[in-house]
Amino acid sequence: DAILTISMNRSKFNAVSIGLLNDLEQAFDHASKNDHIKGVHLRSNFSSTFSAGLVLFDMHERCAKRHQPIIDKFVFDTINRGAIAPLRCSKLVACSLDGHAIGAESSVGVPFPPIPLEIMRHQLEPQLVHRLIFDANITSSNDFSIRCE
Image (tube, rainbow, N blue to C red; front, side):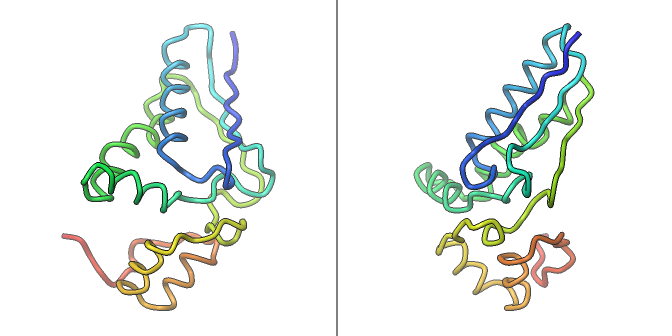
């Protein structure tokens, strides 16, 4: 019997990219298919941050090349597989969190990409834009004045 430890050590403080989500999906799928693995321990090799949030520039570039809306490609194709991989895993999953779990990119020294920044500036209130970029606190969907229906 073994516990599979997945140590995330991606650039930009484990910011969620398509590559990271694909790797997580493969690792959790591997754990589910192996009888000798009884549990999975997901951890970050960065002591202060589990993940720095999304790699927004990467998402924009990849989706633009495929001529698909960014939200469609990322949310429906990638997050649907990678982000819920721990939930689909047939084994017990535990995460180690030291410091904050998901931080804003600027709070961990990752420059915020200009294209998503301009979109945010035109669509959201200035106070909310500031929170999304500089805070490491939880932001609820109720904080947004715009709604998708």
